[in-house]
Amino acid sequence: MTTTAAVPVGDRREHVRGALLACPQLHGLTPAALDALAGAASVRHYAAGDALFRTGETCESMFVLLRGAVVARTGSPDGDVVDVGVATAGQAFGYFEVLRPSPRAEDAVALRDATVLVLPAAVALRALRTSPDTLFALLGDLVRIVRQQNRAVVERVFHPVTRRVATLLLELEHRDDHIDLGGPQVLLAQRLGVARQTLNTALRSLAARGLLVVHPGGRTLTVDRAALVAYTTGASSDPV
Image (cartoon, rainbow, N blue to C red; front, side, top):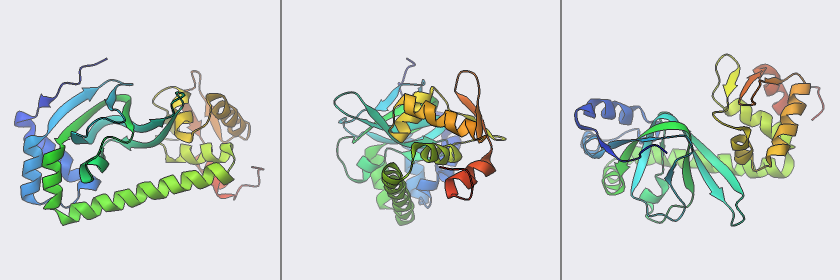
């Protein structure tokens, strides 16, 4: 496991300011709030699989992701886990308990090696209280998250797993129709709340339809995005 000790930002202040200004959830920070956050920020590095925080821990900070990907994860007493959201580079996360001080409601785990800005909770809360536009930006992000979770509930009830997998693949980062899952397929299964074997069956079904190719190792895919869109929207004549 890599060290997660905070590293003072020091003379990297302008780089930090740029990252804060570019973060969509922190849009509208006042100059004073921006200076306060940049001055208090530190940088931490996490290896894939490291936890940034765990359920039940005291909230000491919020984060802006500079590099990598971080998943919000919840679990059952039996050890089953479900991934409920993913932060990608440029996004803020871990701010729920800053806005309403309380213990962490979920885990945050690095899907792959990650670098984050750490913003102390007390400083962040003071900055947000003086930046109404930023509070509205965070409110908009909360609405987005609630809608995603509502959609996930509907999909689990009404949509077959193959269609849910196809929808999620369209949401993942891609380059020239190539998707890097960023880790083993079990991570994708956790995001969908299904067993690894169920996911594998769905991927084979989509591959049989010619919608994707699973490369050796199972961590990278080549997808036909247009065909996936047609499949998920019902425009395809192929049976669900």
